[in-house]
Length: 496
Figure (cartoon, rainbow, N blue to C red):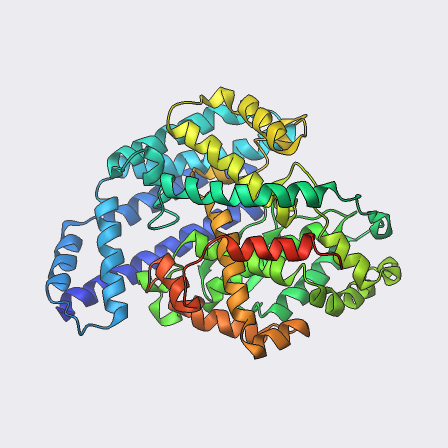
């Protein structure tokens, strides 16, 4: 392999990563701290950063370096070099198909769309957001046309989040999952509603923050390399393994909302903090896909945070922060956090119904990008499908099609990775618990062995392997919905 050409690619990647991480910090700032009058200038900044990065990655010499390094790459080359070249080539081929004008226009549109979405959600008026969504959809369709696709423009968008995914394959996978879920949903939600009155009370935000901090630290989240802040929609922004920022939102009448937000985002954060620092700026130093990333967040949120062992450890601690919880026993809390019910909000839904929320969004996105659904028809289409799936009437846009931030970011094709994450999470959790040390520690409410297992099998492997191959390497077999279906039956249909 031509070492000179390869090293030039490494150096360029390092430089571009520094700028991309700075751009990510500005994006985080927009959600958490930025003054409202900064919006226009922030749009200019984000557009320039995106344009500069695109220009660096698409210079003709980059293609020459890739070609030269590839020509010298032999079977004896190490797996890191092979994976880097695989990803550099894929990214170069996609990025060179996009004009800088489109890249900058998209970044600018994102900034204004996020602001409009926040206002629209607060006022529950889709019409405020609709023009911005129209713009983003148009730009995404233009991107897909530039990239090319097999059957639908949506395929081109999926590739940004899940390498190897296709609309046809996801439709089949999520359709199979839905078929398995329906009887579980029907039985679990038909049970007599759990009386949560014992949890009623005041949960001061500062005490919630302190409790969440303690839980995240016990999970292994490094607060010397990260922090938790407040945002309209919980998210994790990983500028680098040594600067990983989480957000959640708070409800003074319900500490579980912020807690599970932190558990979910800390799962993402642990992945970011576990990536190999010396590979920063190289493709192998990044997470391999959103389906794998979401497996980490859903694993910590559900397989850890909703387990009885978790509450054996943390209910007494929670009672120290919120004294009225001292009268609540572990069985009661376990039932409270595992109550299956039909609800409006995806991020606050239970494990049983969660994937129905995802499927609804996936189906709407497919309709949008096959030109079967106009933007102004989205609220009606959403509400109709939601009532069909959940038997609930959506009364306002804030609890309907405006509840998620994703479309304001122009990230279409992201939602199905949540269900892939659930499938992968159950698959990985089952394999991890087959290790006696991991199982023993998890049953005792300790997490270091689980984190070390993930560090070794998932985090530290970065993008060396493609998503499906990574799961096979970690577990010895491909992921499928079976482990998730078994997990849900055991937790929600088995009487405790």
